[in-house]
Structures are given as C-alpha cells and as structure tokens.
Image 1 (cartoon, rainbow, N blue to C red):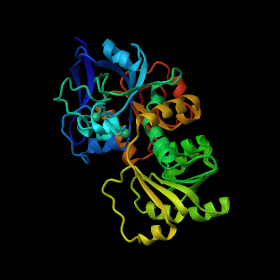
Image 2: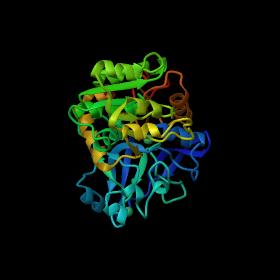
Image 3: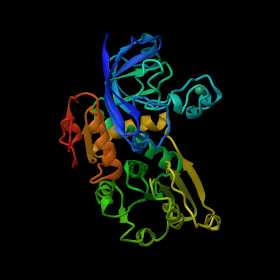
Length: 386
Ligand SMILES: [Zn+2]
Ligand SMILES: [Zn+2]
C-alpha cells in the first residue's frame, strides 16, 4: 500500500511529520499527487490557534497537483485523464441542494467549512484532506480545474488569490473599461485586484500600501500595471487621485488585512454614487468613531466579499497562463518539513522580509526555472531555508 508523507497539525504551533496510508479510490473518487500548496493568512490563523477547529488535521487549501489513481466516474464527470494537472477548490458541492442548484455552493446543505480542504479532521475517512501532504483524496463532490499546460505548479497555486481579485474587483465591483479604481492593501489579493482591473481595461488603477515594508509590494503592483502606487504613511492618496484623474474613484476595493481604518479611507476615495468592496476578513479588528452619514451623503454602495467561485478560479488560471508577469512575485518555497513550514508561516505573518507568496512543495518541482522571475527569497530549487 502507498503511504503519503504529511504534516499533521496536532495543536497550536505544532506540526508533526507523519506517514498516512493512501486508500484505493472509492467509486467517484480519485487520488491527487499533490505538487504544491499556497499559503495565506488563514494558514497562519489555523497554525497559531486563532481559528478554532477540530484537530488533528492536515492543513493546506490552495492545492495544485496531478491526477493519480482515479475511478472512471471521477474522470468522466470532469472530462479529465490521469496525469492532468489541476487546481482544487476549497469547498465541495453536492449539486442536489437548493444552494448548490443556485450556484451558491459555499452554503451547501451537505458540505461546508467543516469538510472543506485543509480544514477537515484526520479522523474522517483517509484523513488526506489537506495540501501539506504528498497525496490528497478527491471526493465525488470535489471540484477541480485544469491548469494550463505551460503553467508550473508553484505559480498555479496563485489561482486562489487571483481568483479573489477577479471576483471581488470585476464580478462584484463591476470594474470595466474606463473605470477609475483604488485598491487598498498590496497583498496577493490586492495585487490580484490590480491585475484583474488592468485586464478589464480600467482607466486608472491606484494601489496603496503602508510604510517601507510594503515598498516591494507596491513595486509589484506597478509591474502589474497600476498607474499610481501610494505609501499612505508618506502621501495622501486622495490628493494623488484628484491630481491624476481630476476626480475620485468609481470603485474602491479595500483588501487590507489588519487595518479597519482603511474603510474610512475608502469612503474618502470613493466618488459620490461610487462603490466600495470590503473584501476578505479582518479577524478581531473593529472600527470605532466613524459616522455612517458619510455613506449616506455620497450615496455609496458598499459590498462585502468573502469567497471565490468556480468561474473566478477558472478565469484566474487562464489569466495566469496568459500573463507570465503575474507569476513574478517574491516567493519562498519550503518542503514538507514541520520546522520549515512553521517558520515560513511565522515569517509571512510577522516578518522580517515577508515574502508575498509562500508555498509548500510536496515533492520536487520538475521545472523550477519558470517561476523564478522577480524572486527575491528562496533559492529557486523547490526547497528553501532562506
Ligand atoms: Zn487561502
Ligand atoms: Zn449542496
């Protein structure tokens, strides 16, 4: 029997290397040979214990790999063949319930956060439900998207943050040709919004960051096509916006992680009748001392945006395949080692020198050369202890 090498989260800050038997796929299932798993803020919250969940489990939810042993039902239902490289969606979909029929599968009656990839306990089934492992079980209700042939697996893990950029900026925010856009927060999701806005032929895109730690990220935003980048600690974004465009933003997307006060800035930057998209969660941060009349006075439209859907994931993979520059982000890659993964999660959350993109490579990546552009961290050989 094949065994998977996996990292199991057993408690706050405690990852353990374990060998887990890989089951033969049941009807409708397949086994994924995991290549790479992207990391985000949720990974750190899970690791550090901020997110309460049922442990132990194998974390990791931004997963790319190739289809290994698979049942004909699994392949036929998805038009896939063994060996195809795919990106895995976080949530499963039953197709039978009301929410799923309406396309709103994060609210599925039979599935949810509790059995989403990277968040499902080891005690259920094979336990192979996370991307910090060499193998993952794809259920009959799992959703996968074919990765374009020429896209390497490390870059492909960006399908998640860039999918968010497309859905939050273009689908929900309504960014289109000529739109004036302000994006607050230069993390991967903010950069994803910038890229999506440029791709949608927005007329003007501003990206803001805060302080010297964001300088690299703002430079990446420029490379992605932002017309103006602003360090809000040094310059007034509203003044810059007026100077550049003669007015204010049609759409403001607030993708800041720990800065609830950015919401007030979003109100300042939006034109009367404009749209503010508040995207991604802010944990325990709350905002005091702002007057809701400021929304009323400008008749602003405020939208909350939480997740990503299949259409946006699909679009993000194609977008990544067509625009190599989008893969050129500062990246640190580590192998399946508890200390290396823990160290990378800590570095991404607290610095110093936070890489924009952190990836766990479950196995040596075949062609690392294609994902190295613009890389400042990591040695480009799949494994790094930078
Ligand atoms: Zn994530
Ligand atoms: Zn459902």
